[in-house]
Image (tube, helix red, strand yellow):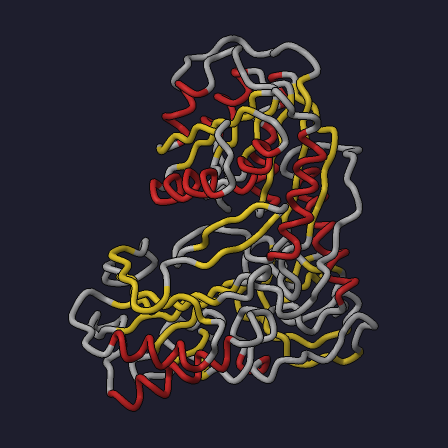
Length: 453
């Protein structure tokens, strides 16, 4: 079987007797042998057994953990040119197939300046036996003992090994998800590209941690750029949950990142663009597509800690930010003060509820920005945005499928897509960022619906 292309999701696609076959770890134009794992009505999931004839785009994976499939770099075996082509195609396919758009002004994808060591944040998990590392793909109760990581900061393995050695030497218990007992859960590492400062977050279950300050001192001694070590609690018995109860153990509570000439305080739980170098290009794209905002009213929905809000304010806009996470809103206000920007107002709350006050129908801003989570904004938010009639909308998305779904909500209100810019924020993975600009070119063709919908 020959692999035709890569999916948004990472697998290769081939066909047998007209049936679509998904094969992991494959590359376009590979001739492969695969074993059926699951058969569905319209497709087959298969396991790669061997590559009979490799594609010209198949390259040797560089990480020593590739055979253990940690899941962080699922496209290491794919040439970077082929990765970019697959991501650009994923954006086009989603907008055409899900969104129903044709003939879109899709610009060439912007490649990342660095294919490795581009992430400014990594999270490593503790195994009950004290091992600290990354999960094998799909195996949440197992941990690969980390020797290297080619997408995280180069210093990460050194700090991880030091943390693991301390835990083993002091016999500190580690969380066991099956019995829901144990103290240490994760180690979060963040590094500023601009300043080089490193933040280490020790994530634990609630409970006594008498070795906390000694562990912090041990980690700070490993690398002089460690400017912050904190302890944070994850209180859920299992699964993801927000961090709480952060305690400073060494240095200060944050590190400083500089993007677009603006200073941002990064705490252990701050959402910030993970690829600092590409964040600069992302900001430039958003600024260009937003147009001249001097004196304009700009609304930034899902504003986080204020990256785009501050950039718009620095360009002369009056900015209203909306964000559901209250700590992020506090950070956004702090970042505005840090940069002596005063033309911003931030609202904490769910966009589905807050926008009713921020965006009265027909009284929209000149520009509306939104950068929702991977699940997208949803129909209610998109319709609320459309009824406010902003002149221009700039949508930043990390998921082309939910992007396409959300954009379909705008078409009946007279909005047309004027630019689509894919950006590669995550080399060695299938993920792709997309910025879409829309202009209101005509009046709504819809009846006036219930304002609550």
